[in-house]
Length: 305
Image (cartoon, rainbow, N blue to C red; front, side):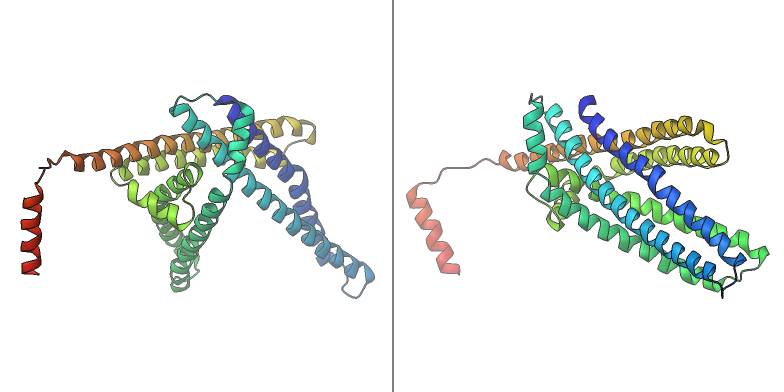
């Protein structure tokens, strides 16, 4: 499991370094050039040149952001496939070579990709609903200084409610990703199957989501504090702060990977519970009927129908 965890960690760290050394400088360039724009005369060629430079930097930033989003999504899907397969093989106590494991992971990319797409759509729609509910609250509240506190409280309470309900929805979402890796079901079919087999374990998995969510949130907050601190200190110790950021990125990713292991275990438990329910139906005693009795019963059924 440790050797399998190293590759997703390495790929995510490379994506983080791309964000630090490529995207963040582009943002800083846009901010610096935008601050110079008000000091220039709009009728001068320097103003037009600065404006065109800002547009070019914004276009470059958008392109880099799209690349980072695409690469991060691919890394995320690949990490899910690798960790779920490794967890399943460990639980089954099966030995497999790294070469065969790589082929096994690459063969099962279609299902998780489709399921991930549906989950992303549902998540996007869910948070659009949050903003639709939040807009009337913002519009009905006056923007006076005395009302800012109450408005922040209302927004915070609404955000907590939506975050808790998303943790409940994520039970089916996460389990459907495991199903799409280990079975041939994907998309809506995997989501429906996850909702069907998860009955009886929703409470446990809900608290699992809360625990991992709070843990990842705490690590992300520490990471953001380190990044903000790095911007305010001398550039001579930038490398040290980048290394610290990489450590916390690895911790956040490790939390995510461990959650996938947990959901893989939950998947096998749900399947075992479902198997027990099916086996309980076989506890019925059957009586062998003779051909005469069968004919008599058939004639009775025909008579009353």
